[in-house]
Length: 360
Image (tube, rainbow, N blue to C red; front, side, top):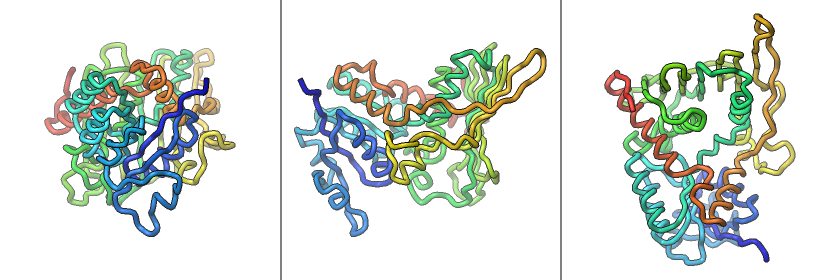
């Protein structure tokens, strides 16, 4: 008996849809790109020309009403995610939604409840769980190479002196805009995967551009896990003039690991490569991290290459399998996990506002 193929509809036709989601749908055997919602096609930006065999809708309600669609992928701005996800679930569709999931943890819980009521699954696109450098860090920790981790730093520092003219720069934090919901979501999600919910959150938000805008463009968030547990620092700055940007610095009782440079998958997808193409997910060896371990009582440094990449396609494959078996526990990034990350973000916002640590 042939395996079932699920029809996938994509809401939105911006960079998220074009660079990330449509290519990943196309390499997922269980998924078929069925339809796209593009509200206002342009001569040089027309989904019907790019995907002539795909049905094109000009509004989300048209897609919700299509009984042949099994899964809807939401790639629009985060202020639309609650309404679109709710409508899709209630129309009997599974949903894969871009990060940030929704603006608040209360809204996330609302969608969790609707998912349970309808029996339809939600997956949140926290793709950087499958960054190869993050998988490398996970392996070093799992193998005990670093010993007991005492400090974990995760960075998204860049030199971007001009505020972006999209939701990342224009939407306020109350609508899930800005750096804490954009890059901060990735940084905090990775810490959550490794260490779970923190006991305390301390944050400083700033405007490094000093451009007169009320919304911050840079964050430092410290997550405390109690005595004998690691201190996690998640940092994203926009005025960082470096030839190499720090990504991870992990320190433990037996050693440390320091990694520069971002994972290569996003740039490769932008260049038109897909998972399965030769070299996809594999970075230049010159970008490898540095592992320092004790040799007797002296530190010894060595180059530590990334592990074999699993690629962002793993998220899509995992969600396809979860839909096939109808099991929420098999969803690769669960809505309840995204809810917890939003709780940490909300605590960071409160800490930055009051100047005090927030405890759970």
